[in-house]
Image (cartoon, rainbow, N blue to C red; front, side, top):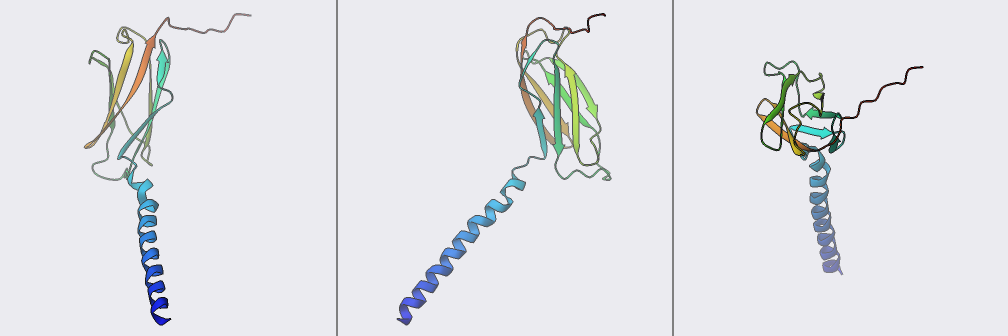
Length: 143
C-alpha cells in the first residue's frame, strides 16, 4: 500500500513539474514574440490618391537614452526605386506614425511597394499593394 502511494505521489509531482514547465513558457511567449521594431498599416491595398498610414512601436524605447534618435523610413517601388524617404521622432512611449499619399510621378507602377523602417540597429519592413487607377478627388459641391 505504501509503495502504491509513493508511486502515485511521484507521478503527481512529475506531472505538476511537466505542466508547470509548459505554462512557464507560454506565460512569457507573448512578450518575446514582439519584435524590437513593430509595424502595421491601416490596410494593405491602396488606389491612386489614397493616404497610407503606418503605425509602429519600438520595444524597450527610452527617450532619455543617449542613443535615442529618429526613426527613418523609405518607400521602395516594385522596380526597386526610392519613392520617398523621411525621418520622425517617436513619442516618449516608443510609438510612431507616418503617412504619405499614393500619387505623383513616383507611384506610376502597380504592384507591391515596400516600406522599410530603421531605428538604431533594428530594421523592419511592411509591404502594401498599389493598384493604381484614376485619382479620386472629392470636393464639396457649392451651395
